[in-house]
Length: 287
Image (cartoon, rainbow, N blue to C red):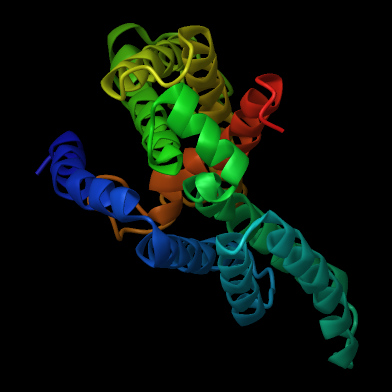
C-alpha cells in the first residue's frame, strides 16, 4: 500500500472521530489532547535518546498533563500551574549528586514541556473559549454561533490539515526550488506557497459553512496566518528530527509517521490562533 493511500485511509477513518470529539468538547476533548501530548512527549524524548541526551521523561509527561488539566479550568489556572511547574523543574535537579549534565537534562525536559505541554494545551483553551461569558454573548448575539470553541477548533484544524495537503500536491506539481534543504529536504518554495493559499481559501470556506460568523477579511487573514505558522511548525519538527538523524518520529499513524509528524504544525498553530482570536474579540470591543 502506497504512502498516499495510507494517508487517505487514515484521514477517512480519523476525521469523523476527530469531528465528534471536537463537537462534544468537554472532558472528551481534554482526554484526546492528554493522549496526544503524552504520546508526543514519549516520541520527542525517544528522538533525543538516539543522541544520548538525558531528560526527566516522567516529570515532563506529568507536568504536561497538569498543564492541560489546568487549561481546562481557565487561563489563570494555566498560567499559575505553568509557573509553579517551571520552579519545581529547577528544584527537582537539587536531588542529583552528579550535576555535570543537570543543565542539559533540565533544558531538554523544559523544552519538552513547553513544546508539547504548553503549546498544545492552547487547543483546550480555544475549545473552551466561550467559558468567557463576554465572548459567549458576543458569539451568540453578533456572530450567530452557539459554540464558538467548536467553530474555531474546526477552523484551525481544517486550515492546518489542508495547508499540508495543498503543500503536498503543489510541491508534487510544480515544486523545484528548495525552501530550507538542510532542515527539510523535501519542502519546496512552490509547495509552501500552495499550502498557504490552500489554508487561506479553507478559512473562507469553513467560515461560509458555519454561516459566516467572522467577517471575511478576518477569516482569510486567520487562514493565511495559520498557513504561514504551519510551515514553521513543520520546520521545527524537521529540525528536531534532522538533528538526531531520524526520518519519522514514530509509526503510530499509517502514512503519517508518529504523533509529532502528524500534529507538528498544530503544535505551533494552536497557540498563535488562540491569541489571534483573543485579538479579534479585543478589536471588536468584547473586552
